[in-house]
Image 1 (cartoon, rainbow, N blue to C red):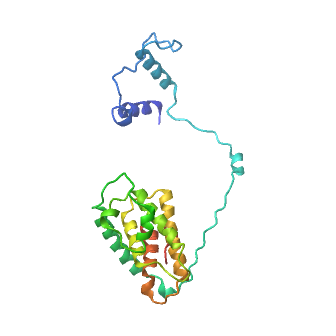
Image 2 (cartoon, rainbow, N blue to C red):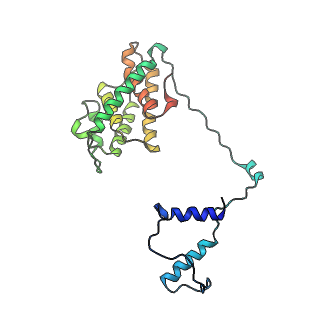
Image 3 (cartoon, rainbow, N blue to C red):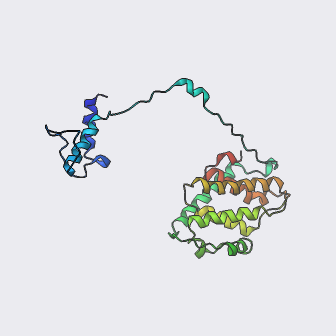
Length: 241
């Protein structure tokens, strides 16, 4: 692109968007313009700005020394290995995952359309710890949860999952709370919130590997939450085959 083409493009673009003129001003410098003179008026200041702009190149390039690239620090990240010793017939099929994801999306669309916009956190930690093991989510309450409330709820649930004995799983009440929070979460998730969601899925994988049940239906809640986190929230490295 030549300087003439660049200036032509800038002239056209100056009528729109961020380059649109804020105030009318003739950018043509007067014949007696002195760049060494300190501006004394607003007009002289703008003229000096135009002068400085005329000295700038349309683009700049950097000179790179290839020899320095050989000293770039390389860090190695090891892939996290999660336990997955559950029998293959207890794992969800692709068709089952597809059906459950569709059900989740439909429910999420329904519940999201009825959410209230709130900027005040309403979750009370002590009460919540008792609720998740003794009652289902109160509709009028959870619909007022802020995003911080929802993430805090999942953090508290993660803490509860850590207290479960090997070979056991969570109560039905807890499963409904998890499903509700997943349905209410605002997306896309920021990195910290995504970490909380991933942690819950990892705990479900851990629980599933140690679960003593042999009935495939008892594995449905664990399989479901692993499926939602991996397929809906995009954490595909945690997904089942």
